[in-house]
Amino acid sequence: MKELELKKTANEVRKGIVTAVHSAKAGHPGGSLSAADILTYLYFEEMNIDPADPKKEDRDRFVLSKGHVAPGLYSVLANRGYFPVEELKTLRKLGSRLQGHPCMQLTPGVDMSSGSLGQGFSAACGMALAAKLRNRDYRVYALLGDGELEEGQIWEAAMFAAHRKLDNLCIIIDNNGLQIDGRIDDVCSPYPIAEKFRAFQFHVIEIDGNDFKQIEEAFKTARQTKGKPTAIVAKTVKGKGVSFMENQIAWHGKAPNDEEYAVAMADLERTGSAYAG
Image 1: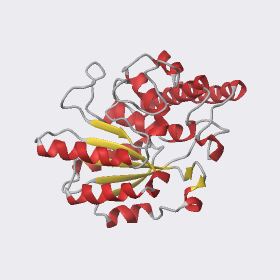
Image 2: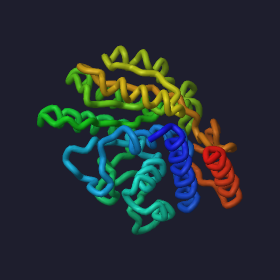
Image 3: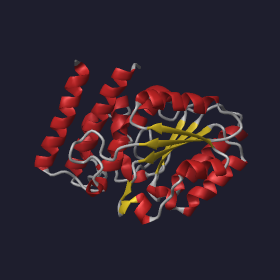
């Protein structure tokens, strides 16, 4: 898929995020929007997956360790064909397959239930080790929040992944700089992130996580890296694509009202029109 097509697709994913959270009147739009480009590249370009066969044995696995940004994962899954895009409007509703955090029992394409911060990374390590022990060649990807790095379990998992030389594991840190209580460096700074993962014997790549060329090159390098896991530290903009949400901590975990929804969708429609030429 060409860069322009990826941008168009990511814009549709962002529309789905905003629509889902507005419909639910709850959810986490900020971090979902910041990660939309990374999720789009993973599901439309990088991973070996098949929406018609979500459980195929040799598929690549993805774990959303920062499980609260489920609207981002659901939107990319819907746009990729795992279930109808219209279903995004059922987010968090009674009886819906799209719960507030990803549920592998309910939602097609979800490889791991997540939500308790720190634990998704450990699950991804287990999946990667299982592939090694079974001589399978699938890869495992996990998306972490930068605020999530404050969890001690993250560093236990990092130590384990490096010790086991899990070069089939690639983690992506969505470094948008904001968490529920404020700036990450004010709450409990995980900086310097890249240096920490290097100290834990990861191959570290630092990129602009909203730039598809840099995303593509990072994943290419990760696939070529042998003998150690890869950590991609992706600098992103929280609320990316919606004018009044960008870099605003208030949009970590609240839904737009009808008026705000209209403004957000108008922003995204303008972006889509610009991509259409």
